[in-house]
Amino acid sequence: MKEAKEILEQFELEVREIPKESRQKYQSKLKAYQGEMKKVEGEFQSAMDTVQQIKSRHELIGATVAAEMYDDTENSALLESVDRIERGTRRLQEANRVAIESEQIGADILSNLQKDRETINRTRARVRDTEFNLGESSRILSGMIRRALQNRVILYSIVAGLVFFILLTIYIKLR
Image 1 (cartoon, rainbow, N blue to C red):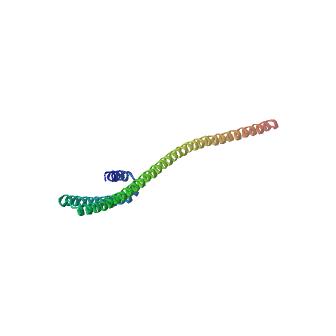
Image 2: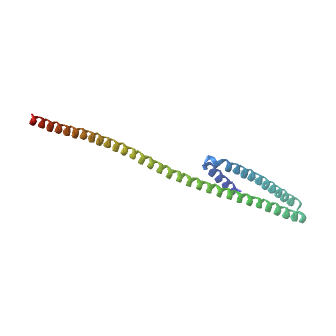
């Protein structure tokens, strides 16, 4: 009985740590197991009361018939109670195993989510760096285009000046 109660308490603690999405299912199972445990305890207590009554009768009567009746009744009631307790214990152990598996699955999911979060944060940092580098590249390229246009204007000005000086030289020589 103590072992079954301890398993129920462990199961209850495990259920409290399960994520909210699946906690309700396990809480209902836990309540069913607790109800069954109370039922089995009640049956066990009534069997023990019956055994105690039979013992008391045996002590009062002291007859061999009462002793035979006491042995048969006590054994069958105790065996039935022990069998029910063992079934309940097996169910509780299975529920405890399911709770532990659920906890492990939840821990794995949290671990995967943490890894995904780290990956997203690294990707976000890379995107920021890329945006910064693109902005820097855009400014450099704009400066280069501006300088190329300035150089073209200067080149055309020099060509125009040379043409002007050549024409001026020709005009002066012809005159």
